[in-house]
Image (tube, rainbow over all chains, first blue to last red; front, top):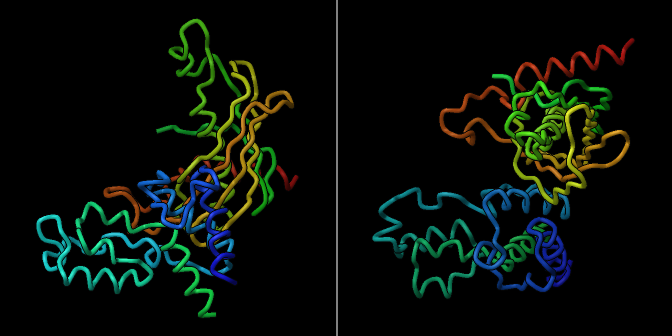
Length: 129
Length: 158
């Protein structure tokens, strides 16, 4: 499956799950910020992707919750520390942290959840088969 | 606490579909205030009945071994109001089921006409994911709903 084919499937899934239009689902669209996804939508998205791609997707793989568990090593004064960024990269290897590193605010963490994140994750799963 | 928004199962095909009926009676408390002088069946209670019909279908599919929780309702459409004296038929059809959860198509008919429809998503949650303080008692399935199902199963055997 090519990168574009995966993106097309993801886009169709998000249109169904989030009730948005095709053209709103760009590669850089943020699930929460741009597409108005809520936490229950994340579950719906995982559910539909599992069906579309035919493999189980542990929810923690794609949408990890409580990445830092309030650990002061990882988060200090609302910003994610260097150690925290390392932890983040380990937990979410498909995430693109380049921009995030410039201003690693905890409340901006949700901006990492983009359409591209999902496409990259699925690509690694598909290619691993 | 009584929270059963269906009266009886009239059909049940495991892992496929469930049909239940709900009789709307002026004797029900909610009609007193909704609305005074114009008793109208509240849409959320119709949806609750559909969710119960679908929830039993999903729970039964896994032998009630998992906690089935109502997660999301999408594309709810209501075509007309419904009133005391009517009998609503709730039909739940299973469209998808896996470890994460299930999706059910729900329709509501009255005298054969479609009055509402919705797509329902249920989630299978582990005891750890239940809200704090909530017992792991497969709580969507109060004894009453499971009992209704047993009645239906017994009826189909005759």
